[in-house]
Image (cartoon, rainbow, N blue to C red):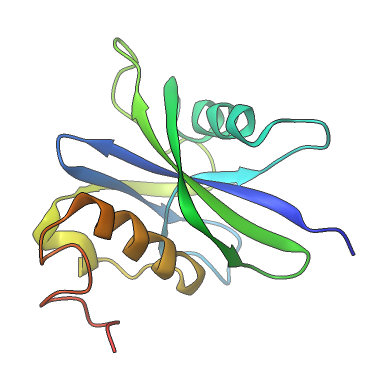
Amino acid sequence: MTERIVVGAALLDGGRLLAARRSAPEELAGRWELPGGKVEPGEAPEAALVRELREELGVDAEVIERVPGVWPLRPPYVLHVWTVRLLAGSGEPKPLQDHDALRWLGAGELWDVDWLDQDVPAVREVAGRLGGAGWAGGAGDPRTG
């Protein structure tokens, strides 16, 4: 079975990370994730991420860099995450598709939401790159072990 890539956006703005609350499917509804989606056949992952953010959040974004790591989802899917920023004039993200709420999380709020299990290691990796004890498994991170 060939691996299929799901792209996730660590959308950063002013030291904050955007979290999106799932509205579907039912088993994921109410939990939070990094927005993104599946890469279509023949599509570059970075292009897929730009497309997904336009469809899901109504924003134009620029992909900055790949976050090290590959996180398994249900077979055959794996999650790859990129840091992303909004393009000038893009406007604020809105929950248009598969989400019912968005939240910008500052350093002290990162673990205030119920992240999807598969997104936790990716969020931790992104947080570690941002720095600060409140981000990377410091006090307040209930998932550190």
